[in-house]
Length: 446
Image (cartoon, helix red, strand yellow):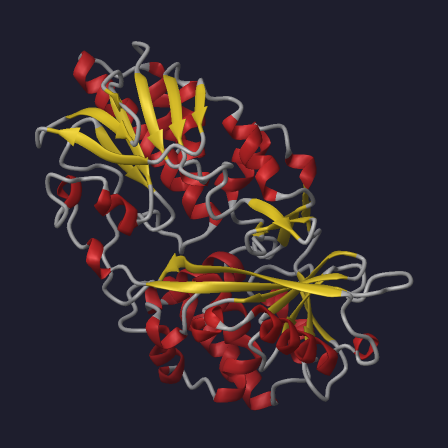
């Protein structure tokens, strides 16, 4: 392709993914980020002298684009992936139990451990099994996920012990506010399609290291540089304006931003920025993570697996990042995002002590809370997510909230960036009268 100059606004995974694909195709790429470090919602910062991630981000084996992104950076060794799906489940009044994949084809792979699962009656187990079969077949569900589950006979106990621990964190929204389309997508993709798909992985290095590795490959990274406007005539953008200068020297623009920030960049038509409809329909939900450091003499509190699900608790998951360092994840956190840090620390310690005997006689050495009030969008029924193209021929958008087919995850962010890069390349190819090899390659890959 002709050496295009492309500006990418936003150095989260969506923007960095787009930037790497465009660089691979031969473009000159500059990334603009208003924060002091790259990574967006998948970054890290210092809390009480310790570098922690902005939320406990995990991946699944089915997140193939994210895996490819990390592999491209030569950092696949930083991802710890389960050899097979296995989750420790903790609940008050019960010994720890496990859900574990057997060497059987999906969806039978969960059946042996599910039959021994102590938190459901045999009747509820049969109902959950029938619902999983229905999820595999129902490709056009209507309404919200809670209604779909009720329609398929799921009791309150089944919700608490099976559906909520997996679906609420995946969607980061209450199930009565989440589309059944998105809920069933999670079930089909992770649990009933391939017995290896739901294997859980997480990075062994702070997430900012991955973002930094990606940012190091672009031609220029402008940190602490807020973009305040994209000048255009209604057909094409002509300049990107920061707080200090205008940059008219780009051929194309990738805006990898959430809806509310995207709206602020189009001073000419803020009600319908860049010709995109429906941005006001996007609502967000917060995520809260509470970090607790315990005086552990030896070994790990959570054993070799390093993470567990909690039933009937505002703490859906807990991860042991290092011996004695536990990160509690509260998805769809609601009003908890406004609680004082001291109260969040005390509540999470109480929740852990109630299910982990090793913590009942100790207090954390210290604790801290990280909050993201607008962590992800709510996948509401009927919500229309836009694709990468806009009304401007040389402006595309990216972000986990765009139409990737996935909920707002790291996988969705990476997929959106690749789709945005493909749109830029396709436009360039059309303008030149032929499809370049780089555009063809990316079109087939995305």
